[in-house]
Length: 599
Image (cartoon, rainbow, N blue to C red; front, side):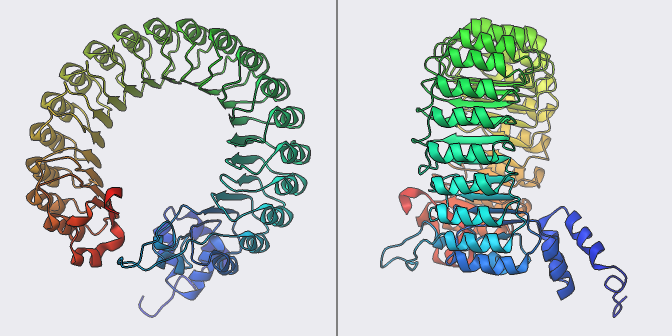
């Protein structure tokens, strides 16, 4: 077909645009845009989403992209993003993220890099954005410090079809929020976390304007937003389904108004020291459709409030209880009795919840798929035995600092929960080889195993895992009894492994042979590894993208150079600065990251 263009002569523009939209990867779309000018222009027409990061002159940059992409419906502006500037020069690319040296970096005179000043998108840039993308439906402005109410007013007036707006960390004021309420009558999703310039006045005007369409609202660290705002939400936002509140200035009064006025509420995340059982009782009575409830640091919340949730919220599927010190087994028993559809449960730092409470979950909540127990000293083996008997669908188990749980409990999980895919255990010192061997014997679907600082787990456990499971992710940092024998067994038995932490030279050689799909590896604090092990690894693991190798005394500058030069896909190498030669720095500067102490 050389010399004959069968595609451009036969396919109309509309069909090519539709083809580009259906491509499932960004690199494929970028490649298509380089074929010819027609494809470049049509591929730009197919783009509906853009991501913009920090830039040396962001306002001018916005002008350029608004000319190139006319059908954009979603824009993410995140000043935390920073990638090499050449990505921003390719207008066929979906992400525009200039050089990292324009963010955060400001070297002193005499350093190797020049001095650069940080620059952010401003109100002028937002004005251009609104003019260029008038059909915008979703706008995310993450930590855009230079954006004020003026820019927000401009966006609101020009983008009246806006449905989702994320203003996290932006110092916008009440006039901007009022303009959004007045102009964006289709707004459904609004995030105001860390918007310190807002007050009740702006929130009330927003609720009056677009309250009927609002379905999701997030507020955190806004000192001037009080119960008055929540009363407006309860009065005007009848369709609200998701509410996230993190404020010490909110009390029962505001939450009572929401519970009474928002009967469609499905998700409630609450972090407030002033909320009591009275407010939770109102939620249980008025929000019968609630599916997710997350309660953080409710110091005045007791079993009475949780019992009201159990009695009224029969559709509850996801429950998080964090640092609720006055809850006991009785509250969890009420949830088990009333919320039979529970699938996810996290108990974190609730020191009065013990074995009996979790046993009730095991007996009654047969749909449970994920369980997380963090800093639960009173929960023992019998609780996990009951979960193993009753929760056959469990797929993920997280245990952190649970001193009462040992091998007996893990064996119960292994025998009963054979669909387990993820097991994360950290600092549970009573868990040893016996429990993990049982996991390897019974849980054939396990793909993600993390055993951090479990001193009693050794090579015997990993041998059983390697023989019985097809792991993709393994972390055994801090497990000092695990040596090369255990890692070698994993390398031989788990060819799909893509993430690994903690090993030595012999294990590195086996990994190179047995796990060619490895993409991420953590070698930090591995004193047995030398440059020889690095050579074995990079010989066959050509897909490696990330490697942490700090505090490895056996690895020298030569080993660092081998890692960088031998892995073409490498994106990040974390290492001590003194181990990087000038030649390596010149060849792969952006790839290398240093410890903070070395900066």
